[in-house]
Length: 274
Picture (cartoon, rainbow, N blue to C red):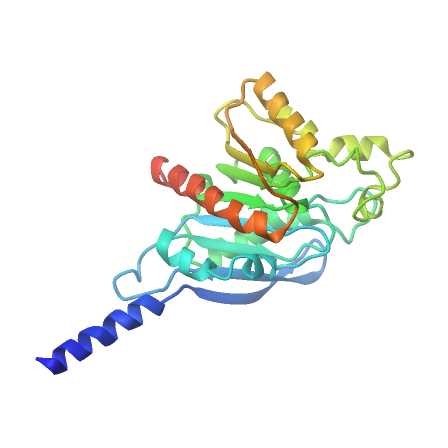
């Protein structure tokens, strides 16, 4: 009897430390002629789940960061992949702001994420390859990128989110190397107008996307997020908008991602996936 209890305790101990798999891969971008480092976190593959397929959440980093940022903020992502049955994908994107730069052909990150990365992930991992099983979110620059890409590619993404997102870049014409990818604002106003999230709203109608936006009350992006919220309301586009105490930092984003993944979990659960 003691022998069986010991085996049972060992099995319980093994299950408690089980976590998803973390892969660091190099995804080739034909558009930019280079490999892009990307982290992919997948649920643990067991005999029982060998034929399972999972929804995917693309998670975008902020300026001056890289694909490791989300694991640094949330080391429990592998456990969350198991618990929620989701795949998480975090690509490198330099200070690209996730659009195809109109002034520098080395920055084609809209094309990379929406065409090359999604195609790679769906071919290499057990995804449910449907917009209804695909969400995208990010922090700061990545919050801008997530909403920008989702609004421009609603055929690819069914849900999107932003945490402390720079959702209107125009009030910050000299920050975060933005002139490197858009040109100086004074001489290139159209580039700035065409590539800010605030001017993508007209591409969507109510119900096209399931949207969640949040920002800390002490964040320098708070006012542009409030403005985006008002404009979405003005167009009758349903969305979740949350502000709570917090600044533009890892502590806020580590808390925020919990809420956003709950939001996406509910979306995936309630959406009929073809």
